[in-house]
Length: 144
Image (cartoon, rainbow, N blue to C red; front, top):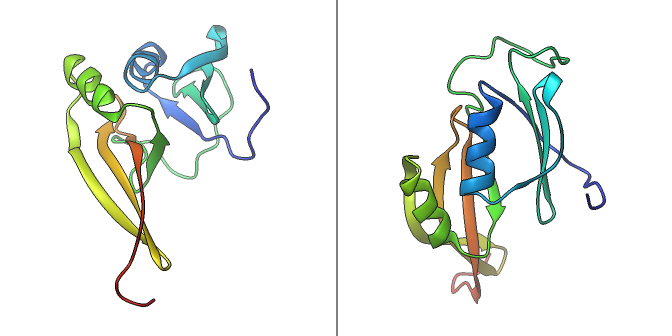
């Protein structure tokens, strides 16, 4: 396992095995370590780190309200990948519905725009993931 980042989200999941299938086979995460008796896994994807905890497992719970489906309402996680079209193909071949199909988007970042080829796919519990590839930067014609 590489050095720990300063932010590592932990997601409560209904089925650790179903979630691991999604995170490993669709997004390309690797299990750095796990504690199967606790229903816990720590995942890495380059510099991105993520923890998964089985919601009904014996581990500690940090919740401010009941955990209703879909989980993660109001949040989506952006993840840089090397081939977003391959992520799309794997998502569809494994039966995951795309929330937003492959698209090119440009986002203003001051006097420039940053481009991304991206899609949005939901994991088995409804957490939204936006894998993307960088398209570069370009100037904005209108002053900020």
